[in-house]
Amino acid sequence: MLDIKEIRSTPDLFKQQLDLRSAGSGAVIDEILSCDEQRRQLETQKQELQASRKQISKQIGALKQKGEDSSAIEAEVRGIGDKIKAIEESAQIATDKQQQLLLSTPNIPHANCVAGASDADNVYVREWGEKVLVEEPEDHVQIATRLGLIDFEGGVRLSGSGFVVYRGKGAKLQRALIQFLLDLQTEENGYEEVNVPHMVLAECMQGTGQLPKFEEDMYEVKEAGLFLIPTAEVPVTNLYRESLLSEDQLPIKMTAHTPCFRQEAGAAGKVNRGIIRLHQFEKIELVQVVKPEDSDKTLDILTGHAESALQKLGLHYQVVELCSGDLGFSAQKTYDLEVWAPGQGQYLEISSCSNFGAYQARRMKLRYKDDDGNNQFCHTLNGSGLALPRLMVAVLEQGQQEDGSIKLPEALVPYFGADLIR
Image 1 (spheres, rainbow, N blue to C red):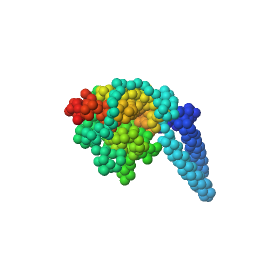
Image 2 (image 1 turned 135 degrees about the vertical axis):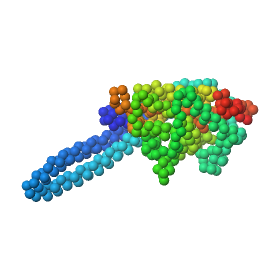
Image 3 (image 1 turned 90 degrees about the horizontal axis):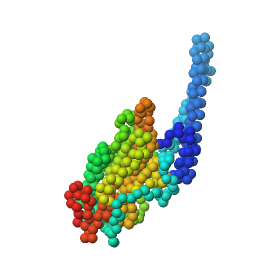
């Protein structure tokens, strides 16, 4: 959430920054400030009436001591009380509207974020490894069907479109990938593994920015007042919701493996074929909570941690910096990792690594006490390390051999127990 104090002091800057996301979106700043001004004026009126009521109330006691009639003044006091109540109701309406506007307004881009209107303006940063070129490559659907790794029809039979069943060596491959990724991040990159609930309270979804803006994309269990998590970012980051940390607790580094549930599976088309977009999928998440002055360098470090998984698996990928118009709702700066998929003939986003600044921390009331004893909002960051469906796509499509087998990355062999899938 944006800071109302900062908005008051530099409204034009916030308008300009929001317009970098989408032309005209900065107009919401005027709405926020209008609510803020109304709320502040009503508060001033309330305080003036309270002072007047207090002063007049003193006259009641004096009249009663003299044995004189105080009914007129008492009626005046009651009238003031009614006015105060009406003002409080109006002020609450303005406060609630301002809060909803703030909660529905995205983060502003980082000062160093590339300006642009859409993904067409994203900037290539670097690539790693050699692009695998296969003559007449099979895509992962053909490979997985031929080798009995994924039961696409079974998923539809059980749950409808957007769900699949991994079977036999396919299920084992996913399990091997999960274990490899968790071991890498905990043993080599220093993350604490956490095992979190897969359903969370609405305030957790609000804390990381999924609510109220994207409620229609989430799976809600209304009877329980819970939401199925769209990403482990939600429960993991919210572990420190409404916390006041000491400076020596930072940085905090956590990783988690969870299923992810999203109603929006994307439009029909080749990019959504097979397991590229699902309503339920597995993911390893990386989360860091840091001091504000450390978040810029931490984004580069966290992105490197996600890249290390692809490098150890020997999978060709590229890194792209998102422009202002393609940023996620809560992010101020993001790097996407895009892995090469020969069967698709294109790169697939497999991880988004983002710095959220104080945006999520302010929503979650996540602070730390600095050396001077002042309470400061932390900065939060996260990234996928990695998303399992697209990782499996890359492993299958980059590893396909002329004889129809799949050669597995060397780093995965100890986890899978073989170097080939036949």
